[in-house]
Length: 202
Image (cartoon, rainbow, N blue to C red; front, side, top):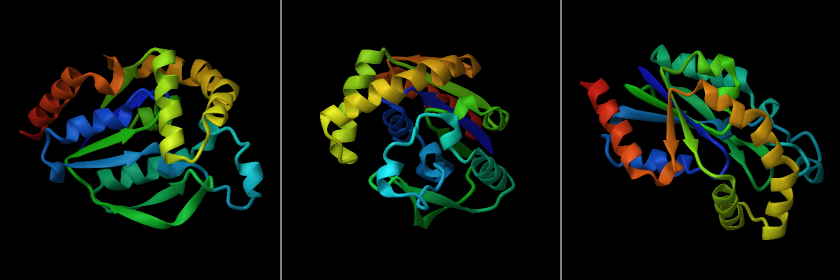
């Protein structure tokens, strides 16, 4: 199994890049493991308090479980990937079975802040996108799919998203083997990465 990490700040287009790669590779050859599935379960605290938690800090992720699942996939075992609701800020009861494939894409904003995860990756890609462009995408995404108003998104951005990006995510780009300028909208990067994957599959 060849494991590729795709990281970058919130709104940098990780999902778009992954979709661009998947459109060029036989789907049966690739498994995807999203960092967001591994947010710690906070269902034991009141909903109002959950909304106040900092979900852009590395401590918000259950790295030990994520690392264990990566190792299980590497050893040929199917895992039960957790699921998480952005609306309730809690882990759901449902899990998603993920079978081992020749290629594993691990994606998330914080994955390079965990040395444990970095050590499991064979290739590390970081999406480089200016802050103003990322903010525009964050506002649109969170309003469309996470039930937030523009004011709520902007308030959260300046309180946690931007500070955490500057403290943790931006420095973690030093771990990357490859920088993708323009993020997920860089179709040439998707073509290049897909070509590299196809070469590995040979």
